[in-house]
Image (cartoon, rainbow, N blue to C red; front, side, top):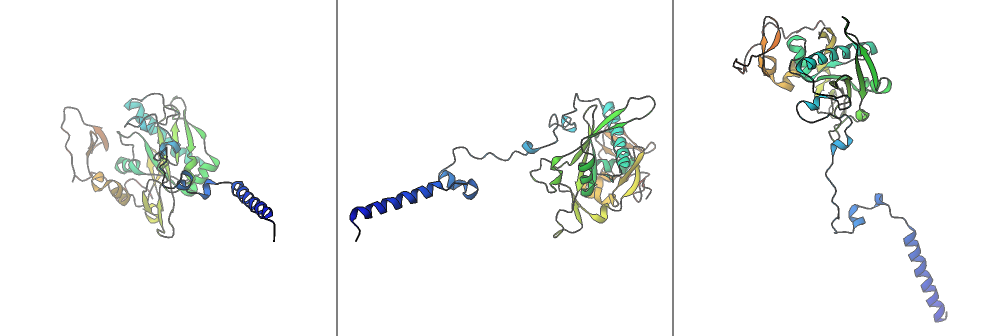
Length: 305
């Protein structure tokens, strides 16, 4: 038998060795839950704050009201007059389509800009920004070859050149909504005042459960056959494209009344000129829900293909 002092020595050695092995193993937060790190059942001294989508937001505007959220903060200087806004938007969309034609990239009109085209092929006089769409493949080409590039546009008649900035959101690779902070995939921006074209990509996000359905990150969904083949047309005097089934798309987004209502936003549709004219202050505005749209065929509505 071992002497008692040997037994005590062996027992002490075993305990010291075991303790040293326990403390030499690093604790990793990835292998432990928060409750384990804090102590089971113990409340956290600093609660986790709610998610802040703006922290991840790439495109920023100088403000969130009806006027300021239509400018890109990097190029904003002041709120423009109504005349400057209309002039800027008209040349902005012209430069956009001319640029994409030059680059050989396919794009088309969407949302409120598509509604404007439906009425007379011109920007709605109360609009503050413009909307277009591209395929996810087109979005990848933009990001790879043309991100953060400048383009000059000349309207002629001795007017100075206008400059535009094409910028692709680094979050464009994320094709679902995420935290909602980066639903705009790219912008074509007026360097002069910050007004812009919003560009969103359409992707088949759920091919297994929703085959043939493409969507943007703001949850606008379309069937491929409603978008393609695109129709060739004109918008603000330049070649442009619109979705093939534009009427169902517009009624889905804006209801039937948007296609027939002849008074809106303080403007009235004028049949002879085919223009939206501002209603004088001394005239009563009559809201029409069932009026028919005069002088326009919804079958082709300005499209030539």
